[in-house]
Amino acid sequence: MDTSIDVDPPADGSGSSVGGADPSGPSADRSRVGMNGRLFAVRAFAVAAVALGVGGFLGGLVPIVGGTLGRAVGVAGAAFLLGALLADRRYVETALAGIVVGAATSLLGLLTVGFLPVGVRFLGEYGVGVAGFGALLGLVLAVVGYYFGRDLRDGLTREVGA
Image (cartoon, rainbow, N blue to C red; front, side, top):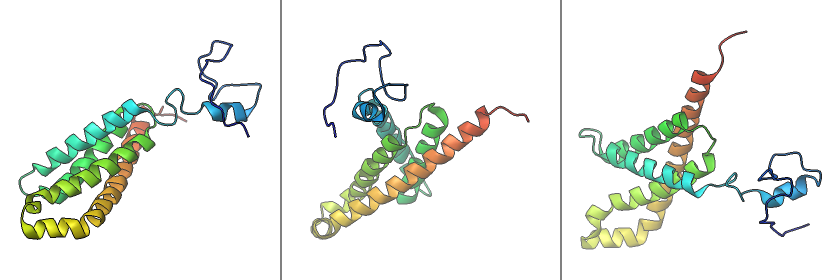
């Protein structure tokens, strides 16, 4: 099994051997996955993280349903918009951004109580659990929202006919 990563472009000038017809077989393609951003793109992750963070923030500003429910709806809505607007599939980046934003949002929600002595104790005892639950909820909301956004995009761009 070859574990080396070739950073030089292919000799044929195509720029990437991922997904192309490479005579050396699929094992050569496997070593190049991710080199051109096909497996994980940092920019797409940054865009998704900012979008989900802004969505969660704006959802928390809604007067009546603000707070946790508003933030959750904001994260799902932002993921939906990402799925509807982006042409490429970016499930991994959106899921990871959902995990990060969900954990951060749940911990920041405790910040208002965190300065009181009981809040510090609660955060010390249950902070990891709260962050884990927030990360799981952020993951589910981001992936479901992104999926439905992609589905809407597919339905709007598909050719109508026989």
